[in-house]
Length: 438
Ligand SMILES: Nc1ncnc2c1ncn2[C@@H]1O[C@H](COP(=O)(O)OP(=O)(O)O)[C@@H](O)[C@H]1O
Ligand SMILES: [Mg+2]
Image 1 (cartoon, rainbow, N blue to C red):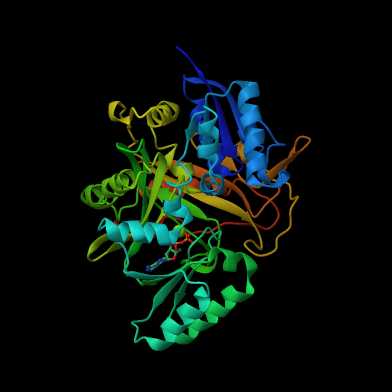
Image 2 (image 1 turned 180 degrees about the horizontal axis):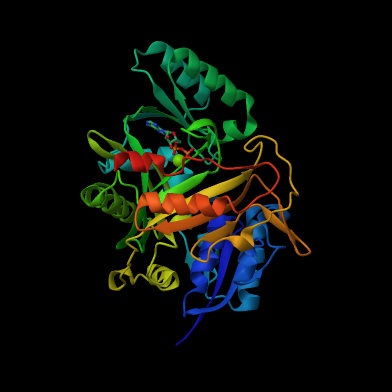
């Protein structure tokens, strides 16, 4: 059997889960992770120097990646995070004859430009919130004018067009809040950049959940539905984070609902992208609101979520590498994806203070005591000799499975409590929303 040398780009829990999953494949040759983390090291070689921050521009980083691909004879590059996809890494590497799992720059606009995705959904009748787009020269003034001049139904949602690290969306209860938010955008340089275009949209009422698919542009294989937990506090309170936990599948998306999502959202989106001349290949993440009128798109993402990836990949019975190769080679039609019938829960352990200021360098103990049935994925960790230290806001994530959601949650928290570091913080209600549905 031939094997494939693989490069994974990224350094979080998502990439640790990718490395863990790829490592189970008989098709895997050498695995490289750039830059990787202390967890990914168990499964391949970290190329620590190849981190985007070390290069002045995305283009310079892409060049360095192409050199590594040549050097190490890499057959496929799997891109973890969204930024390089939106910056066009797939186009660049493919132009040099390399294979990449992840959409092209034009296709990654599904995530990278909310005005593009709203335009596409409107054109192809894909269910989503009603919206108005603003793109003029003084876009903030235009939006302010719109709020003041029109008789509107509040609340409304203001969305910056571009990537904004989770800070680009604001739900406004009334005109005053909306105008205040526009002022905040004016004063924040990164936000202002992301907000060169602005979407104002209808507030959708319902329960949020996500559906993930791997696609070659024409055919798609559904993984599972999942729910993440963006806020820092129990009961979805407090500030937004990168994600404090996830579970899969989400009971709010039963088999019937999943079929509706496939028929009214997933395939129409793939068809639309094909018709627009930008077939979408890679992971398509559908962020959904399950409303009384059915599922509607909140947003698309062009990659796995973190921490959703940490529950989806352990739930995959099929060979991830085989499926990714099939997607890249337009052969997904011939490839089956089998998911586990079990339930999966992931709890993120963070540094106290996150998402605000927090200390680094705390010793992490107890990982060795975690049951062999559970998984620990690293995010913000660092090795110091034999010790493992905290090195970021989200430090690590623990994943457990169970025959039902309750079992998965209970066993996950049992394992989480074995791990400790100074000021460790985790939410205690991951999955509770799902339990309430049962
Ligand atoms: N139209 C909407 N109605 C209700 N809630 C929304 C709407 N749009 C966004 N949200 C809420 O805001 C969050 C962030 O919005 P999203 O479009 O996912 O942006 P991003 O993830 O890029 O920050 C969503 O997860 C959802 O909770
Ligand atoms: Mg989102």
